[in-house]
Length: 294
Length: 290
Image 1 (cartoon, rainbow over the protein chains, first blue to last red):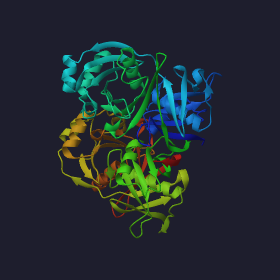
Image 2: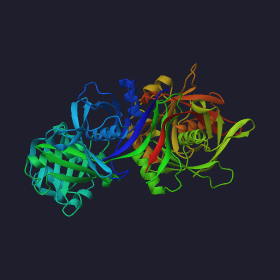
Image 3: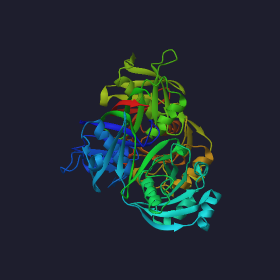
Image 4: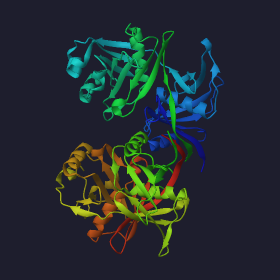
């Protein structure tokens, strides 16, 4: 039986156990779609990726991304983690890009996507460029439905329905304690999200004086009342919304998000706004490194 | 941050992907209970075990067993898989007892013997399950959650062998394989009577497995467990109490309905003790840094 290099990583994690897990199977040639799906179901990790040789010279590597149930064209934390695995395994090296940046080019179901590499001494942060955010609807802090769901926690800024591939409701709360202390009403979130085909509700607050600019919680009511420990896509959409609507002034072109403490993690995501686009990234920790026999 | 040896196994499986996954962490002496629980939650496997030096005379090793939510005193597939991992690593050597290789496992439920037969992917390991005893309970709510599926000969019973399993015989293999229970109603029934879940089974004449089994654990957020040692042991104990065992040694088939194809070997010995076991496949082997 063939063995392949295997990594179980923690993405958006300043230390092991703080972030969002990802399994990566390197040297995945020879596995067909059905075998990839069965491996992803068996690992039971929220996403498992399979690294393949690129099919075009512009790409550094090719990746396929699977949840335990289906294949995804693109997702943020699997892209960040897979790039980390590719670099750690020496399968590709960053190339020079415009503006002095260094990047990998990921080939995936959504096409060719740049992954930027930032070295901070021994630590490395990787960033993926997020799709542009559209603001589909806004509701004020006086909206009765939002008031019923969030009460006095809701800030005057209110909420917006935002879309950067997937839709989220995003609601600004009055302060960090209001975000961290909320016991989410998932039925109420489902009622808010369902008419708009949204994934759920991201609540956030500004955190002056902390080493992170925002605290975020991403609440998904439709698959077992799930709270995501670290959400690349939701945070990127949120950053795009804040920048597009003039609400990012106090945060700057680069800010850090704290997410996941309420579910036993402590993730950090960096959001960079540059030339009208949002990049989301962070550190990745290698938890399990070994070989997979399948 | 420490780096330890780690294995991720597939238990009750004759090839990778067919059984029930298990994480095994070696050299866990310096991890406290909170760290063990946090790591098990992060790995998100049905169970993760930690291999520790034995503290009791005669024991070959000690293990602690964690689900993503809690520590368990004993469970079947973690015991079988951990013994496989310990033997693969050469950390213990089976003793020959009456011509059979044995190990003695120390866990929170006490000292439990294991039987070892063979090597590697063909190594069968059997563990003696805690005794299963019937607890009185009202079966109406749990039967209602089966939505009218026709029952078999054995009376439905709540069997306690550590966890409490509803053991319910259905009319035939097709009834079991096609069953679509009302999981919300089942979860409510389980919460009301303190049962861990519902194990349904049927006899399979002329097959390489004498029983087909499915185990539902909706109250713990697991709609269906792929392959369940304790549920198979509870069924065997109940059939033995009813003098209705298909044989002293037989096989249960479980997991096809959730994309697996596990095989549990079951034996009821002369003393009436139930042994469960099977093959384990080493799927992932490496190191873990935490």
